[in-house]
Image (cartoon, rainbow, N blue to C red; front, side, top):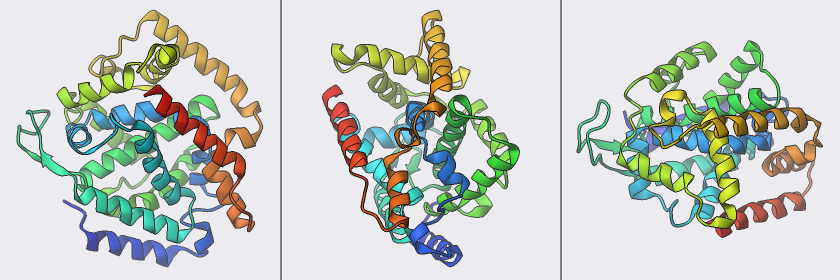
Length: 313
C-alpha cells in the first residue's frame, strides 16, 4: 500500500491531538527517544543503517535513480539529518513541516527495478512511499540506534526497549506508516527485523553493489586510513550474511580493529563530558525549552563535519 497525502495528514492530525506541549515536539525531556537518540556516537552506525537499507532492492534502485549522494554527499547528509532532527528534537511545527517535506519528496521517487531480485521480477515498480519500504528503512534506524547504544554505552532493559519502541511509533506516523503495519512491541519488532534479514527481501543487486563500493572506497589517499577504519567498524556491526554480499572482506585485521575500537570507546565514551557526547540538535532542543538561542558550539561542529565530508569527496 502507498501512503497518500491524505493518509499522512490523518496521521499528523492524530499526533497533534496527542501532544500536550507543542514546544516539546513529539517527545521532550524524559522520553526514551531523546535519551537514546541524543548520543552522537550513533553516527558510527550510519554506514550500517545505510547499507542495510541499500540491501533492499527497492531502496538501492531508488537511491541510484533519484539521489545526489554520489555527487553531493555532504549536501545529502545535511538534508537528511535536518529533517530527522526536526522530527525527533524539533517543536511540533518543525516536526510536522519535516514530515510534509519528506513525503512530498518521496512522491516523486518511483520507477522500475532494473533486474530480477529477491521476490520481485525485473520491471517491478518501486515507490518510496510504500508502507513496506518505509517500514524497513525505519527498522534499520531503530535497530542501529539500539545496537550502538548497547555496544558503546549501556545495555537497555526490556522496559527501556519497549518504551523506545512506543516512541518510534510516533516517528513512524510522521511518514504515514499505520499502526496496523507497525510491530506491536519490541519482541514483535525483533521477530520482524530478523525475519527480513534472513529472507530474500534483502538481495544485493547491481545498484546495491555500486552504492556500497561508493561508500567503502576512499575518495583520496589522505582519508584512506579513516575510511579503512570505518569500514572495519561497519563490517562488524552488519549481519554476517550481508558482509560479503556488500563487498566486505572481514579479515583478521578487520576483526582486531573492530574489537579494539569497541573496547576503547566503551571504556571512554561514558566518561566524556555530556556536552561533547550529545548531538547539537539535542542540546539546541534543551536550550529552546529554556528560552535560549541555538548553541554556537553546535553550529561550528556542524560546519566542521560538513566541510570534512566535502573535502573527503
